[in-house]
Image (tube, rainbow, N blue to C red; front, side, top):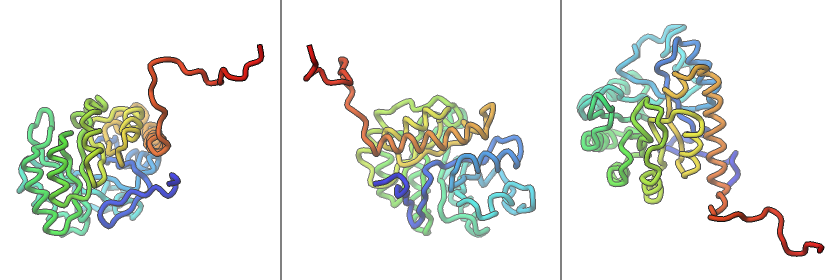
Length: 260
């Protein structure tokens, strides 16, 4: 498959870019816009509980996002129960901005690790109500399988704690998830720099979602561009198939046929 035909499908949505990017933590809306454009992302996520959804005036974040340039992925960041998450997304749907949704149910305020049981409970309800659900979860193959069985359009295991920038802490678990999942796997949370994003894609991840790595970079717009290139390069490397690792050297030029 040629890279330019390499489309990511989530429910009834199709995207050319495999980089999903957040809208929080930037210094202002102008910087947010510049970073989103530089990233090449088609999907941008917004925390429903942290923005004024009704303010769509010029210069506002929602005004920018409702410009039609991006698919909005509303998320339930800050929700600590299944009920809160479901109620938040129902409200967003009433405002006309939620169908493809990122589900987050946090289990611990210090680590921001997900509450997998509550996430599964909320996912089942939302799927029944017709949402296309992308759940943030731990890098646990079992919960990923259960979320897939519940009808989620993808699973989004963390690479490391949200906003930590630690990179992929457990590539083995991600490989297990990727080996068994029948829906797209989008690595979410903990990416710190471009090489982290490339590694995730080289492992076979179908996409990467990040925010802090760009917003807290010294030059956010330049980092957004770097992430765009890293995700693309990592995906191409995965599709190309890397050479087998070997314990010893292997000369680039053959030794047979040498003139003595």
